[in-house]
Image (cartoon, rainbow, N blue to C red; front, side, top):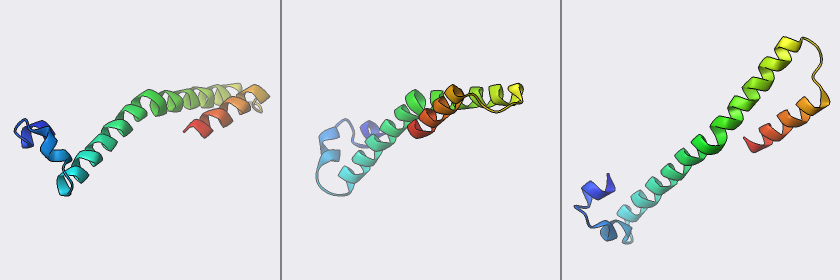
Length: 76
């Protein structure tokens, strides 16, 4: 989008002012998207897997399961 709006002159978007704010915000959004796909999604899937295991077991969780859940929650 920045490329199209700048007509190929990206340097103009990094000049002080409104356009620099838009460019920095866009970069932050891309970083958040990548982080979500590479870190958050796999972590949430692991937590869901452990939750299903705990439900299926029907008893109290094992200490190693609790430790893994705590680690995953901290990562999220």
